[in-house]
Amino acid sequence: MPDVTHEEWLRRARSLRLTGAHHIDGADEGGAGVGFDTVSPRDGRVLAQVADGGTAEVDAAVAAARRAFDTGPWPRLAPAERGRVLVRIAELLQERRDELALTVSLEMGKPITDAHGIELPAVVNTFRWYGQLADKLTDESPHTASNALALVTREPAGVVGAVVPWNFPLTLAGWKVAPALAAGCAVVLKPSEHSPLSALLLGRIATEAGLPPGVLNVVSGTGPVTGQALGLHPDVDVLAFTGSTCVGRHFLRYAADSNLKRVRLELGGKSPHIILPDTPDLERAAATAAWGIFFNQGEMCSAPSRLLVHSSIADRVVDSVVRRARALRTGDPLDPATEMGPLVGEAHLRRVEGHVGAGIADGARLLTGGSRTLVDTGGCYLEPTVFDQVNPRMRLAREEIFGPVLSVLTFHDLDEAVRLANDTEYGLAAGLWTSDLTTAHRVSRALRAGTVWVNCYEEGDMSVPFGGVKQSGDGRAKSAHALDDYTELKTTWIQL
Picture 1 (tube, one colour):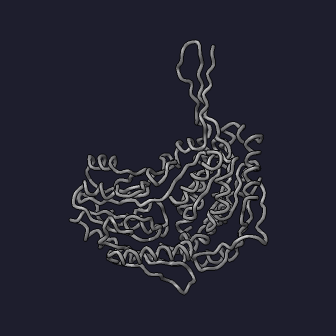
Picture 2: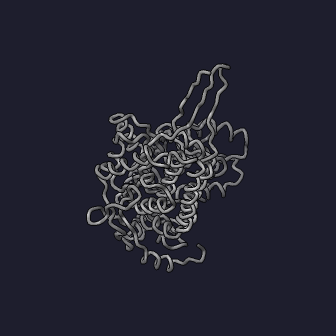
Picture 3: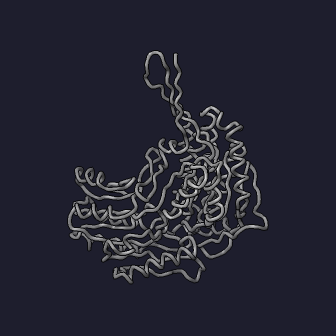
């Protein structure tokens, strides 16, 4: 991509043909005449009219998935055959990487450098990884009495409803769809109404790759209508959701009110990022803290939005973070030089502005940012924002903002740092900087978080699981552990 200029991306954007039809039972349906507009946060322009799925469309998609699972070939294929189709999906995603990256950038504002260089490689790798894993899973035969044979087999759970957010529309879809397909399930994917176009394209690509009709269906629509219909549907066996804790509670209620379907949740976060005085490289720690909160416009549930820094080094670290925030290039997401694009939409921008106003009203000190920028573009841009003098009771320290807003809190000893880090209803991720191996182990174990990064942030690969504790959810994405969400264990006892 280094050879693709801003002007070339603009030219490609003008020639892009975006399709807003549902993808149900291997074919496109709807999308003409009745739907909602997908608006680009880049400039406020309408990208496409997208089909607005209701109960009828969800019923049709679930029925197609149920037929594909109950009587179709997919669950009955040899795992190696399923794996080959997943690898083929990965290959086609790679072939259409430019188109997909451009679609993501336009629909949710991700800088094209990140969409092309981070998001697309991630989803390609996800499908390839699970494709290669599909035939590596083994059943069990526990040792029993000599007159009996026990078998424990892992079987696909059935029809999976997957509801994904807009911040990583392809990566998070892949984290759910790929392991579910590898297990032999059929899937109904409901993307966010802010970013449906890339998911709809994913559905068509999967069919093109050889996925049988009905195995992956994509239905666009709103959460209160389409999402609710999927959550309440009695023929959905598993519901996997990534999004806010508030909506996660709704899906648990839907399960209780319908068929007690299994619900797997990856929810919000208010992740702490602890920098100790013995940090080996304070400049690198500060640079990572700034990158972590401003990457993807801060629209990440794992974003390190609370910077906890020891009082003896606070001034040096905060000065470095502020300097980096002011140097960030906010601009057109189609410009390869842009480091931070727009927030996803006007309503979300107003919500983040409300948090900034609340921080000022509560007595925190605004060090930089906090205002809209590039207003003349018609887009939804906000300056990178840093507050200090934040105390643990302030809303800045407690509520998930989901934007480029960093709250700095100071501590005086290690015990206080751990107390501050754990003083949240969330438990998705945490960061820790130290040169002491014992401290790294002890603090990592003391932190109530699904992932702890030491002397780094947002690192890892497909071999390690990702998910939260407390009100950040209970499911696990990535790694072989993700198969647990989409399979059932069956015990067979044979008396000899």
